[in-house]
Image 1 (cartoon, protein in one colour):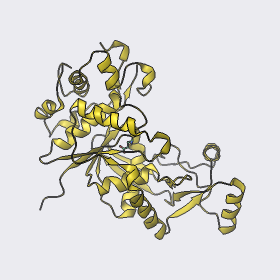
Image 2: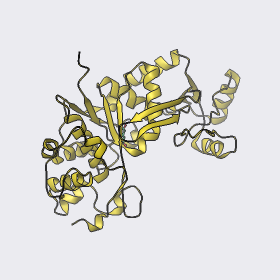
Image 3: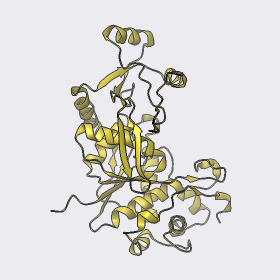
Image 4: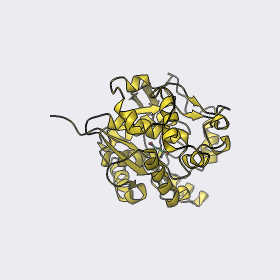
Length: 321
Ligand code: GLU
């Protein structure tokens, strides 16, 4: 019996227009999914955070994907419509006695992490950025009441992860082992946290492969652990090296014309942008105009992943003409 159809996805946060880095990752995700017979590709708008919930930006992002020639199956999913599923998953973890309330501010966490007794892996395993050092983990009822009173704020809810080591396999980079910290499941403002939502929503959408930026590799053991605890199948992962400006920092507005709209304003056609992206991935020789469907036609599905670049792509927007 064959398994579920390969389903890939692109899951942008609507915090700003998609730039060359996002579009390049989307292209890889689309190619990887569509290279399989019957491969599906879905899009999810990650609009949980009220601070970045900008429906007009989300619609521009979807338009840009379409303009570039990246299509998807079904309707885009809006993550803010999925709160019931996120809360049900959090309840499931609470029923397993794996959650606790946390009143810490970012400043407190930073100070505790810098202290000499902060979490220190001694065996080469990786701690995710901003790993929580466990300040509220062992509070009893009195301690909790005291923290609640002293801070005057509602608590976030954290996973009790017991610093478990989780190994994931990245299709390009191979094995990666991380220590799972007591990550946030629900923020103090009630919003489900990214790591929880991404696991629940990918599973519900039948996503079998996650292709995304390399900055999220360090969070992948967290997500694998959550999937395991929730009884959900782990997808496969492929992390695509980031795109950086000439100064070596992650590509951003300050580097110049980097979004599709800006490049189109500067005279680029979407097909030329696609050609630039495809040649940066070693999938088109010249960088001339091309449609994703044409790149797909010529793709060697067997060697595609192994041949992807393993280092960052340096782009100087001032030199693009
Ligand atoms: N929404 C995240 C972003 O735009 C990506 C999340 C993911 O792919 O897991 O960076």
